[in-house]
Image 1 (cartoon, rainbow, N blue to C red):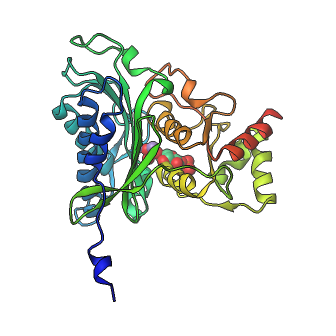
Image 2: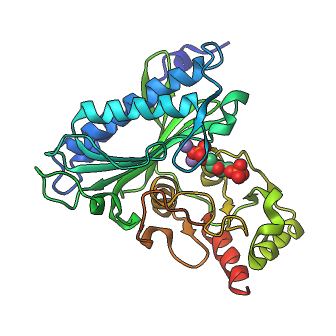
Length: 333
Ligand code: AHG
Ligand code: MN
Ligand code: MN
């Protein structure tokens, strides 16, 4: 039996209240960033609803076409992209959007807007049809071109260090939105009956070391020699292998429990699979804010300047001691 005090426990701080409180601590914040984060959380709520109904509405299959990267597009990839694009256009705070699902950057027409958003609207889309966790990833940059003019490619190709916020939404056993604006990392769990995200994971810090490694080891023999040696070491140490195949879900687990996620270069894909601009940079900002590390094997992910919208890089991300160890092995290549 639940006690009365359990039943009447406070539900806590909503995401919108938290954003409003944080706004005061940001130099030069004028409320637009708060509005933009609110627009993103609205799109996330809508996508959450779409995902939960996908099996019933026959939305959990392939659309029969490929995106710009030659990957099979799922119906929900396209729906999630549309949801975000619409929320960001209507919100009015974003001058251009970079998305995994769109070949070119999108000029929203809101030329007075200060912000640029890059996003992976639906991450882990191969898991949609099998009821496994999927996610959304986003990064927010300030535009470089003057407000009032059309956005330029320079606005879209900024390195991770220029991010003013980044985050992800994990549609899992519960839905959680995790983000940073450079003052630590906070997580907000969705309460569907109230339609609100509530602060559930304040000031997340990744454990310095961990016992989990996450990697698609089916590609083992195609990995660089140093990475193969590192993985052999993980097995020798009897670490737990945990790989969902949705970057957001694998990353989130390792962020909370301690671990490393790696998607190395392979002989077929010498630049790796994951995209710098809307997967790696965003998670690198989060992991660093939580005390972790992200590298492509030799460079800090945050400092890599993209030279194309859909550029890929190898990724090693997670607990600092584990990432450092992986890098030591890679240097022996
Ligand atoms: P997306 O669904 O946005 O294309 O991303 C898929 C990514 C990432 O989420 C995941 O970690 C990785 O691809 C899985 O790749 P493999 O199937 O090659 O392991
Ligand atoms: Mn992805
Ligand atoms: Mn995707």
